[in-house]
Image (cartoon, rainbow, N blue to C red; front, side):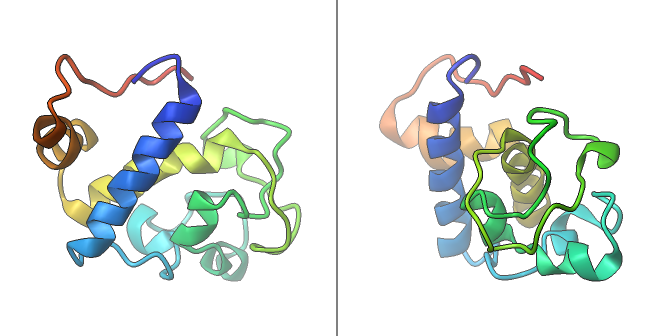
Length: 130
């Protein structure tokens, strides 16, 4: 799904719900449980305060000035997780990696088997438009 970021976010949310329903993803676990330590520039306690649900709800508390940059250096603390909603693409994009770790499947494979095939989507693939 390239070039239509909002639709991609909706599909990511649906896939997250499927992973939760399958018992593979816990929205209330720290993101670092899936991404590993050091996925951001935050302290360990700040990083642990960001749960998967914060990525999904765009309430990570990360500085949104580098909207699409997903490197550790761009994931900077701004405020506590859950304090405020901010449209910020970068931490939302990390949900793809969270899903891959949680499901032990590549994002295209998981999407094809759980969503695309069951509803008849053809010629599907995730694109990285960073």
